[in-house]
Amino acid sequence: MRVSLCDGSAVEVDADVKAEIDALSREQMARLWRFAPSGHRFFQGDVGAYFKERFYAVLGGFTPELSKRIGWEP
Image 1: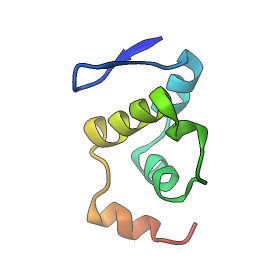
Image 2: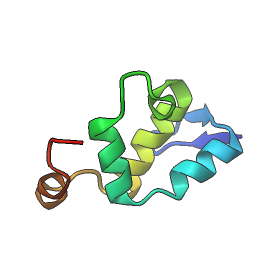
Image 3: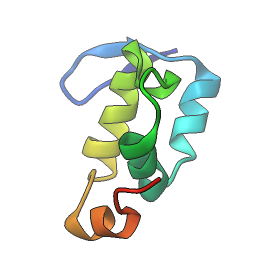
Image 4: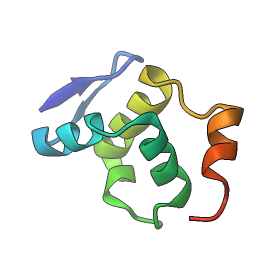
């Protein structure tokens, strides 16, 4: 499915993958952003663009409090 981003561009994201990303909380997304292994499927191509858009533009991304709460150890 085509998903429009805030910058006016559009990306192609599978509906099931979009639903998985949409179901994640801000903290879950932050943990993935910080700790997911290199090459994780949520950070590749159009899916990665959608993940980044949702985490930062929609949910607000990291805050100092959120960063401290999740720490640096997985």
